[in-house]
Image 1 (tube, rainbow, N blue to C red):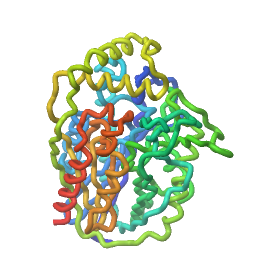
Image 2: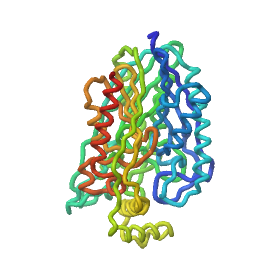
Image 3: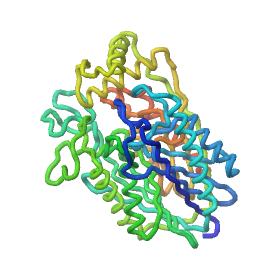
Length: 453
């Protein structure tokens, strides 16, 4: 109990009214607020080492912004910048902290919000450090209930592959992949302070849509637990979810309660976020009182750079890509011969090709690892498919491994090797080649080995 100290801090990071919203390939601007976006910090101290684990309600944060946040925290707290681990929850109803060619956006808007987020993250870090108290840690693994998560890539009866096909489409054959329904739960009990729960589960935070700011289902997990557990704080580090959504393509009974089908064939509404968040909070409650407490006599953090080859477009594909890009930027998507998620796929693919027309031939990806006793976190700078998370979790020598997405950068989708052969939105828009999943798994295992010491 006396070696480990844990602190918590959280502040609101809502954007201004009218700010652009990150998440889709159509312009959206803030028209109101369903709930607050927050940046939350877990400070973990042991044997004169302090690590800050930060969860930000944002779709994905550009690496130079991440670096700026870490430097600001170092300057204002004295904590080494390399000891800062920042993960975005990937909510699709938050502001830009990343430049992207989804639609025209003023770089000044991104930099303005990034500057605001940097200051607020440092404030949350200071709150967490002031809050450090002796603690003990326990962990458990629950199972998410049915009806909240589904593999969203499907083999169609004509042999094609489609992400998010229309609900009840008679051409659907079967989903491609297997859900990982494990919900990783860490519990920190602190002397003279509230308990803190860390949840790690792989599911897209994209259950709402629209133009109202929201942390999506993550908000409902935290709200529900704080009420049910008498002030217990909760942080969500989202797990591998690149191919996981919340839409049941064969809805029955009450599946459509409080929700509707969106423009991209998915179930979205504030009611859907509430349902998913409450269900996951229920999973945590099922294991909360039965966590296994473990000794924590050492913590650590490692960052590695992974160089991977780029998915450079073929010259013969570029004329059509430029045509689709031009139509999209002119607001004439109706002239592109696709609908719903297929339209999103070809537009995103075209933008990717145009962006990479002149290279680069490789990318450098920052991967991170945190050790808290027998528990490890692996930070991946984008959206890995669930199978990548499963294989990382299979690494021996740890009681619990928690892969986290959009960590210390946001660099797009990381599909499985099979997905590059099969097609679908994620693979066709990814800037990487088919070896990316194996590269990430191998690098993660190297980090885990070094953390083990």
